Image (cartoon, rainbow, N blue to C red; front, side, top):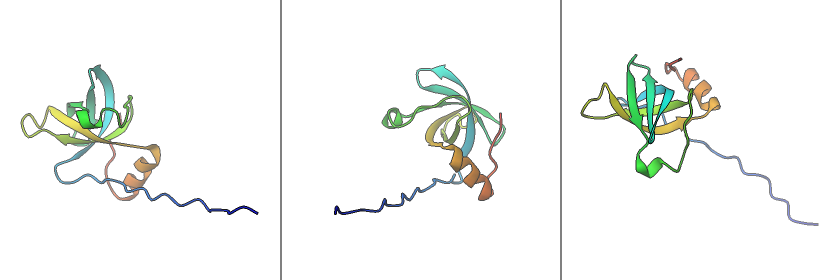
Length: 102
């Protein structure tokens, strides 16, 4: 008989938006890791993926992302700091966050 190990349950920490962060939907890809993102404050920002995160996730149209607006031009530019999965979208709605729709 071999040793049987039960699979461990994976705990997934869901990053929630802080005061200066916004939820957004990727509207379209602009090229060179730039994306047009429609945020939940009714503004469309041109957002980039920072270099440290470029290889960590890929974005496509319709993805739910967490955006950190820049200090300068905060209503026009921002950084994408997290991409949520489909299950995360439902959890955010349950927690009371307004998820933008295209």
